[in-house]
Image 1: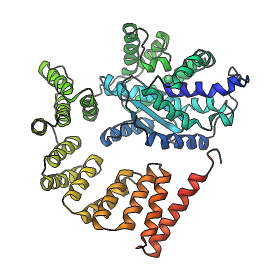
Image 2: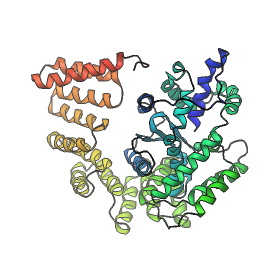
Image 3: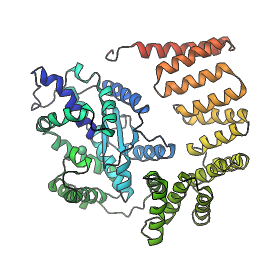
Image 4: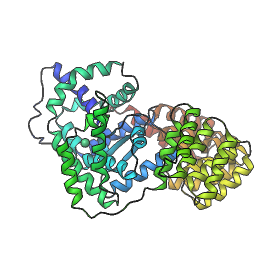
Length: 474
Ligand SMILES: [Zn+2]
């Protein structure tokens, strides 16, 4: 839990300066209420939504959310909300934030060779959340200390990409002290392992992956002295802890678990984003040549992605042909295939392909986004709006669907609706000042009826209230 650890250390600074250290040896008497935690979680999400550190590729987002929900729904507490996101960071780590917000580094996905390994780490984080470890730690802080916790989380998200920033130095000086005060987290670790393992079992993953992956992490630190995987620095791992997990696993029935194709494909997608396009192409070619893969199809998929990055579109299409000939029809492959048609200057062909693919995979957002792009490029805003209307029922909080809607209204020359939709997009991206600006423009356009205007006014009022409200106000 890198970030938690980081911002706890920042939290301690003013307290330490005030020479008023809380006694962390005592067991917490209070826990943050779920409402408090939820509110802090929302503030963090607001910041996360605008961070460049977050991977916004919709297929990666949906994959991780799907995996996360599958695990969380098998947890002991079904009332807890969860949000999962991918952080663009090559180190092996995952972390939990208040309100059930869980971040997974792209490096973790890249460095797990099986889906059950990735699931193990996420299940462990869910374990920390449902056991309310954070809520307990934070309840020990004075209220004013965690008030601006979201802002700190973001500053740290930014500082991670630039360790020279102030936060790093401060952190180092505080780290030793904090570490001593957080001794009880070893119990938390054991508890998170235990709950994580239950979740893994119920969700149908291979439980042996948990001790195996943790052990592999521990071994790898011996080779990279001084640069232990982040996960180990933040979740202290001991041989004893691994042995404990292994004992539990041995008492569980064993079942063979096959990785989902999505896991293989999404990992390949991340690999295709690594390094220069040519480097990515060379890597996939080498793996294919030497047959060093667990899924040949995923390698062809990744190679197609890398070719697309290099703008070698004909070669990319050739890989897609291989996939069509050798694998069952899949949403992510269809998204890529249709997207290639589109950017190769065949929007009409792409539009037909999208329509066919969406009939097979009606909820796949990669296809929905692409289809709307193709409809707008071929001058069919009315069809686009009809499609968006039905898909917004599936994804009512999807900001990008509102952006697409705004583009469609722009094509139709409908100014009020265009600004309103753009305002909704900003609202769902937690950018309240921009949302207010768009809602005001919508009202000024003056071509709506009373009913439409009152909806816009209500949203405008809500935005102003949210913005004006002091952050610590209940
Ligand atoms: Zn942990």
